[in-house]
Image (cartoon, rainbow over all chains, first blue to last red; front, side, top):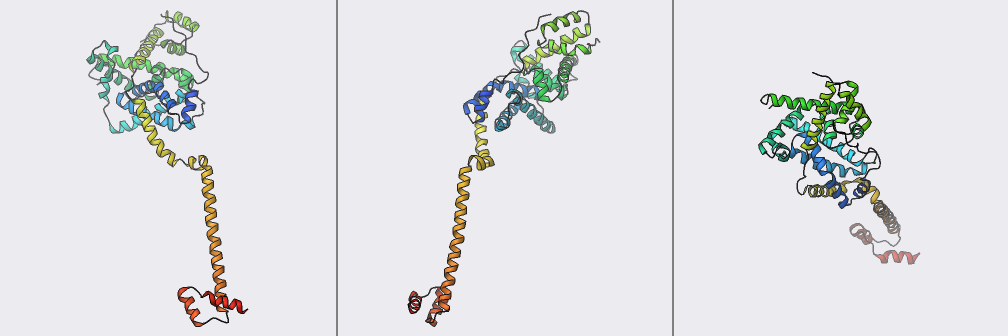
Length: 197
Length: 159
């Protein structure tokens, strides 16, 4: 058993306060810095929630636009990033609902999977991405959201509880079950690849 | 299938992503040595965390922030025009000046109309009750809405 690293510091002042204040006054440079600082995490969050990289970029862009348009309403009662990620989660929920009604196939996103994580084989990467997307799609939405906020975006448990409006114990339980079900789904897919596609 | 202990879930989930306090981690380590259910659960937690923390690492497309800013400017242009706050609070002095101007203009017209009416009434009275008014003057008044000033002047002189 490998000893864990020190947990990240929780609470404290928002490191984005100064940039947010400038952005609220319309400072384009501050807005650009905030986008640059969070674009990867916002796209990653949307991607893991939607299963499609292309859709994720659209939702990420929409989320940033919503955030900056309504920045006047942000009172600093939570961290800026918590507020921003909440907007992303809501935008992804809306997008997913509309996409589901269109019955759109998101499997085209498979080519986005990073080949470095799969031994450099593009084919392997495509299959791995496909498997992961399928496995993620089997998770109930509430498990998937808590799971990606923690494991993809690295939010601490308290932030996730605040964002989703649920108790800390419920967050832990959802993440616990989400990881366990993800592994089971991947194992099922490996054992019966035809049935899960 | 081994089932994890329910009272260890908080420890297991945090141990899975490496955020469990060292003291609690030692406690969990001792527990999983004798509990296969929690050992398997911890393995799944680590697997899930490791997979997801690497699977969605992205490089934003080139120009992503530029596109966001361009869209923001485009929508802001319209939003600012339609923003009622801009018209009520930020442009308060201008709004007040416009209101003042509107009040003056409206008031001016009212006064001018009143003056015109009063003057017209006086002129009509003067003509109708004049002793020196001639038929031609009445025709002139009816058709051209003017009265020879000499008529009125003459009347004034006469009084």
